[in-house]
Amino acid sequence: QVFLCVGTLKRCVSMFMKGKPFFCPLRSSLPAPMFSRNDFSVWSILKKCIGLELSKITMPIVFNEPLSFLQRISEYMEHTYLIQKACSQSDSIERMQTVAAFAVSAVASQWDRTGKPFNPLLGETYELTREDQGFRLISEQVSHHPPISAFHTESLAGDFVFHGSIYPKLKFWGKSVEAEPKGTITLELHKHKEAYTWTNPFCCVHNIILGKLWIEQYGTVEIVNHSTGEKCVLNFKPCGMFGKELHRVEGYIQDKSKKKCCVIYGKWTECMWSVDPQVYEIKTKLIDADEMPEVQETVAVIPGSTLLWRISSRPPHSAEMYNFTNFAMTLNELEPGMEGVLAPTDCRLRPDIRAMENGNIDEASIEKERLEEKQRASRKERAKDGEDWSTRWFQLGTNPYTGSQDWLYTGGYFDRKYTDCPDIY
Image 1 (cartoon, rainbow, N blue to C red):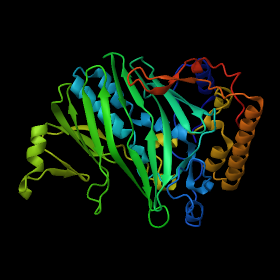
Image 2 (image 1 turned 180 degrees about the vertical axis):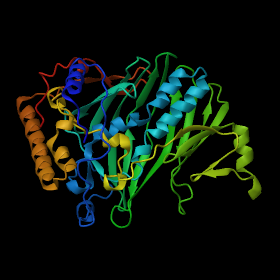
Image 3 (image 1 turned 120 degrees about the vertical axis):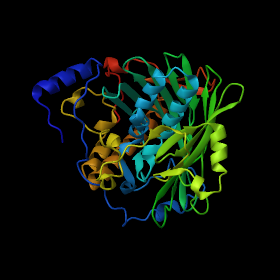
């Protein structure tokens, strides 16, 4: 736990209230290690749910991790430096390579993260300001059925805006749980007057009933540059029978005339590389072992390739802390003085998550049930009075680049006027 002197704390809180960025040391560990799940059977709950959507199924809290899904979304920003790099690049193909690396890096924190984040309550919010990484983020749970989480991130220097809405549709298939990440993600680079859109790949957690849990990402992700017409097609490969394709990502970038400009390859758990298409075709067809590419980690790197991104190492005690990354470890930290500054709907103030983080599993279960009952009671009261739920920071509109429905930030959150926020805790 980090201790701040009174003077530093006062300056931080003052800047926080004014919506200005500040930075203070962040924690590198959680208050308590995770609980063992060995004595709990998920089969007794899931055996009647095969093929069904799981958003309405209540799971034992021991299968959770002490973060809300809104906080989990903020992990997209762990590798913000890639967006900043794209802002500084003059060539549009190089920018697309970097944006593609960012899209892959955004799902990298899910590796070995088999704990389920808490379902956000309707109206729940999360804000994150990171001066060291140059961004601030606000997210809100804008719908309960279906569950939709909207987020908006902006550069502190005014270089970019990154936003979207996620509707994670979960299904149980007997031995695995599959998450379909419905929703569009948009990245706008102001300097280049460019906008990129894409959707995340499917995510599947295997061996839900027996064996070691493991995560697989699969499906095709298309990143479109709406300003230049360039496109990146990434194929997150399914594991396959013998695990040969496990974690592999392979794709290409094409210009507006559909000519392939480069091939991108690697693993979403390790690194991504770029190489000339002709070199890739030649090298991957070589049979002579002496000509085979160099192996770095478990990715065979073709000579002449350019490294786009490499995953950061996790803290040595990560396995005892829900397999959190260094970035994830900081997300629920509540510094002294912040409680009076945050919106009352912020995840950090949610008592069930806080209790679980502190190692109080019984208290966490009681609080989770209380909050869910309070949410149900509020919904019944609104229905009785004929009232519709009104979102606070986002509104349903049209994505200007895709033409599809999207939840768009209406502004004003960092003005710190929270008098009309709902009482959800």
